[in-house]
Length: 303
Image 1: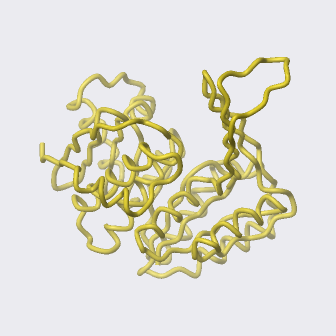
Image 2: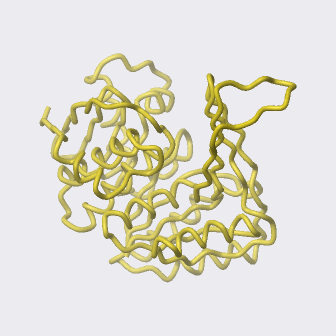
């Protein structure tokens, strides 16, 4: 079973209007509300690929119920730990300039943290756990070290989609996959990356530090998979960019789902690229039909 862990999920409230007049009343043209959070996005895309999974983490209040209702409607299993405060709302304003206002989210007490640890301690070597996104406000991202260690002690594989120090810390647990973008990779090592050779060089540093597979996403410039066996470049696919939210999560879902199924890192990379690209060209997370259509356009070459 694949589990996704979202410690600080959200309702993503998308507001669309031509422009924002600061200090005045603004009227939106349209809006949407989505169950959000990186792990939850992974769960939703996995389900669209007909891959069963369970979403876990912390959830609370009427906003949390919206998320669990959404996942239930999509037939996604959940095993959340209830908290007393409301799950956060992230407001994303799409106007002449795109603006985001992200909520802080609820606090998590010791009893609730223990309940999540119990879930992770009950995994088996047949399971894979995706850890992604920010932590609850009072725990800090350092809590991931404890949670990832618990999962690994059961023999489960872990996928870690983080930035910065949290990503570096996760390498101690030999994650199946890490997926920084080229800018995040450069920031980790304090360098500016100007070529594919440089990107591969520093991706291999992540392998040396413990990662089993590394994907570096480069937006409109394609993506690079680096493994112990070789490196593989996915050419960019042309299309109209509509949505940056969830594209990376979709890539993680595509890779993880296919790798758990087949154990083939290159084939998993192709599905990751298809899912990420399809979401980039969609208003929300990509549909199964569009992902399969996009997969036919994926071109991967060994470097």
